[in-house]
Length: 322
Image (cartoon, rainbow, N blue to C red; front, side, top):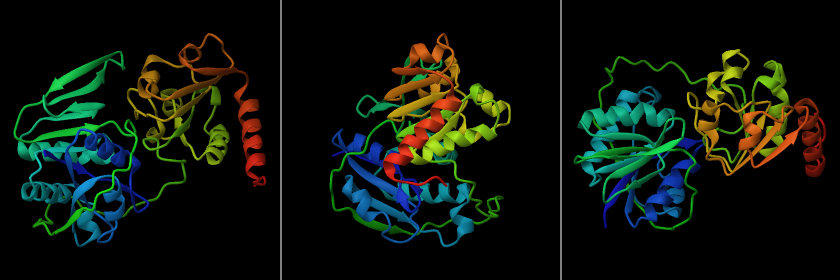
């Protein structure tokens, strides 16, 4: 059985659902999956990764926060762990972490790297990704002894496939003289669920008028356990940070439900959310492009619709107004 590797990512002490989705996708292809992890403690991910079909886990041990937060050190460790394993195909997410580590790894091995993949044929070594704002698909053939693929987050759903994984405690030989100094990790104010992981996303655009008005989206997101996104206009105006931008030049998302509030729906924005399971638009303009592209739309004032929806959801859950 062919063995492939997966670079894990964690959030709040657990492996991200997007990683588990990629593992499930690979298991459906009948391959053995080896996970490379930087767990917060030995055995932290064993049960979770085993439940979704991982056969082998390389727990990479870095002794200090300074080393663990240095991408050059992590890449050294990953390269050594890959060398010790039988893995020739390594998968990760097209996420900030994946964009940081996968190109560095590919450079070490002088190997091909394809990012934002939706599927990969392991036999033909052909990866599928989208191009031209999602208007067409590109099929890219990779050649080499080692191949690297960044998968689109949240594109594949996790499916249990229990295994009892072998756990390898791996102590790499790394150098601290990388030129990068770790200072601290700053936790930003709550912005709702991670956009790449969220099953529901509520995004705002020009119709929100200013940054303060995004609070009504955060209030609704809290009731739906949703993430909050934004159009490029909202980001360019300085209303919200770039990390919230959904679109061709922002993050590409794949939620089950995408709610676009006061967003016209440019081609660039649509490129970042067109693979959503269900698209709902709230807009006053019936001729807005997003209306034609949505599965359901509500023609109305978002400043009336969203607070009323939030109140209804609070009433159903029994929560009191804060």
